[in-house]
Amino acid sequence: MDNSITVRRMNFAIDKDMEKYWFGGNPLISTFFYALSGTFPDGERFFIDTVRYYREDVKDPKLQQEIRAFIGQEAHHGKAHEDFNNALEAKGFPVNTVAAKAKALLDLARKRLKPQRQLAITVALEHVTATMAEHALRHPELLEQMDPTFRKMIIWHAVEEIEHKAVAFDVFRECVDNEFLRRRVMFMTLLLFFGRAISFQRLLMHADNRRASLKEWWQAMKFFWGKGGLMRESIPHFLKAFKRGFHPEDIDQKPLIENWQQRYPDVAGLQTN
Image (cartoon, rainbow, N blue to C red; front, side, top):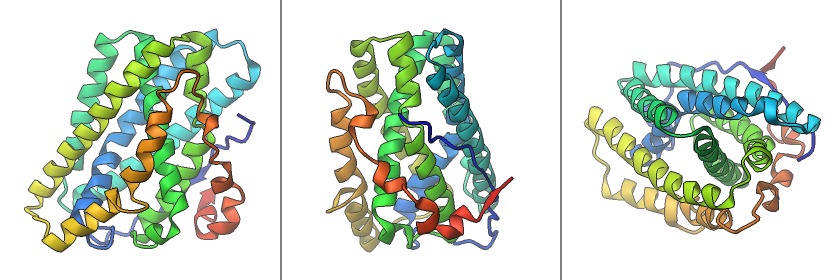
């Protein structure tokens, strides 16, 4: 991976009057992403800790530089999503409950799993987030349906996820180098990640006493499983990660983030010193 990981401080002014269901008013799609956002702050801290554990064992100076940038980017992601989660909490969504449940799972992993398995979880989840980032940037028509604040946050987060997508993987390869462990943990992580996301989504909708209409169910099915849908496009990428010798850079996502500042000037303009 080239040296293009940039730590950006962003200023997202979250509108307290933003739509309650930020994706075109659809509660199923919106709460899926609210559930993910609830897991991000502690998830990002977990990623940082698992990579930092091996930092002194890394001999490659280029990878050392990338680790520093990775930590910086992930720290800012966690803070931005904490602010967004607080705004959702103010609207009556128990996102802090989601965050607490996610933290409990991660604390259990810290307590019971060896460092190499924890790092393998980070490797798996970094592949998931980079894949979802690709989907967001590949479909600007979907971005336009989002609440403006969250749209900007998604674009920034997606760009940086693609920039640093190989860092945890390269640390794992240099310091652990266990393909069987990586692939086994990838399988278990995918099941747990999406299983918990759906569980958290249901919690959020139940708290709002919201039931989706048949039209909203159909919209959600198309969003996730229709032509160009999130899961329909993501699954082939997930499967590639099970190939022996896979590397995240085998999936070329660089064109999606080249000159992103020119394509999204409203987002680039939010960067502060």
